[in-house]
Image (cartoon, rainbow over all chains, first blue to last red; front, side, top):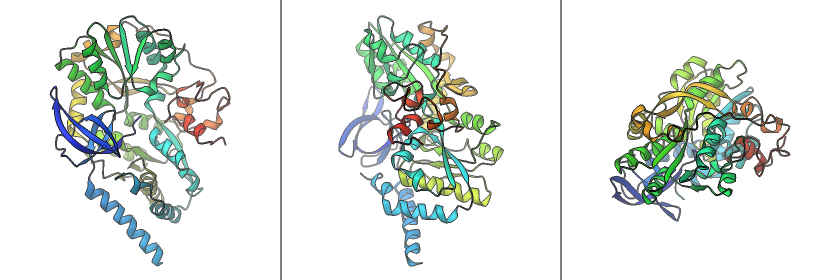
Amino acid sequence: MCLAVPGKILDIYEINGLLMGKIDFGGVIREVCLTYVPEAKVGDYTIIHVGFALNLIDEKEAMETLALLDEISKQDLSE
Amino acid sequence: MKYISEYRDAHRVQTVIDEITRTVSQPWVIMEICGGQTHSILKYGLEQILPKELELVHGPGCPVCVTSLEMIDKALAIAAQPDVIFTSYGDMLRVPGSDGDLFTVRASGADIRVVYSSLDAVKIAQENPEKQVVFFAIGFETTAPANAMSVIHAQKLGLNNFSLLVSHVRVPPAMHAILGSPDNRVQGFLAAGHVCTVMGYWEYSPIAEKYKVPIVVTGFEPLDILQGISFVVKQLEKGSYEVENAYSRVVSYEGNQPAQKIISQVFEDCDQKWRGIGNIPMSGWQLKPEFKSYDAADRFHVQRIKPTESPLCIAGQILQGLNKPFDCSAFANQCTPEHPLGATMVSSEGACAAYYRYGRST
């Protein structure tokens, strides 16, 4: 139930006073509500749950985590 | 797909497994709160590749599983009424009530529709002004922003034929209940990443402090889960008990402020019954008095319900991490996903359904 999936914002618009958007989930396009991420821009990645974007994905944090892991892995190989 | 494939990368997974193996020196019991994480752990066989010292127990974070039987019976009673369109997330239709499920009621002619989002239910209400449209608003903090917005939106549209049957539950009170129990075995927690996406993780420091357990905010992909476990194990071995975030690309300390604002505008804390566990004080949300006119339980007068649970089902012990699904005498014989006796076998995120699906019979 609390699974939420990442998707890329393709378009942002308003319907009946609600901020909405078209999201690409790896090829599947759906309309979702963007009211809780008013700072969203086209091209951003977001986490979607039951038709609502819950947050934007922080690319810098994502890159740092992966870079750290790859660093550990390199050290392991050289040991 | 970006932000998925990197977190399923076998090489990186092995790096974290090696790190955990190097760190562990004694047995530890770690609970993942969220049913989505339970499902990932079994799907990818993570519990089988971790060092044998680590035992993962599965928490109550499956809203389909913990929605009280009484609430399911109310849903069945409302859905059966004429001129009602009952809308729900799909998972709820097969949850057994005292006498049948929503599918049974639909087979008898009721208009029951599965929706992807609470806003779809509002749209159905707009399109069917002669009908009463009820949305089954279940879930943890993750689902609350959507459910709260449906009320705000219905109010803005001036709809008087839309209401919610609310059964909301919250994670922190459940953690208090588990850790405060004399039978508790849990020594460290993976906190539910998407609950924290909404709420942040400021609520967890007092829990970590009080019970001296490390709590790590954790995501859902294999690499995310192993990183969460790695953070917990490092703390357990050191004897520290802090709140850490292993899902920082999505979760911030404060959480989503606009979402929290709407939740607190629409809902207030209340005592809540959890299926299989019982009452947990102030563990739920109900509509605030100013939104009571949107409460389906009031609108349809279904207060007097006397539920009866299957005597065989031990879902309550499983949801508290006291037993595993295969400890149940009914598991995989009288109780299967096709004929579930309890809700942990119904939802795809329920521990029993996950054990059944991925063949963990011992």
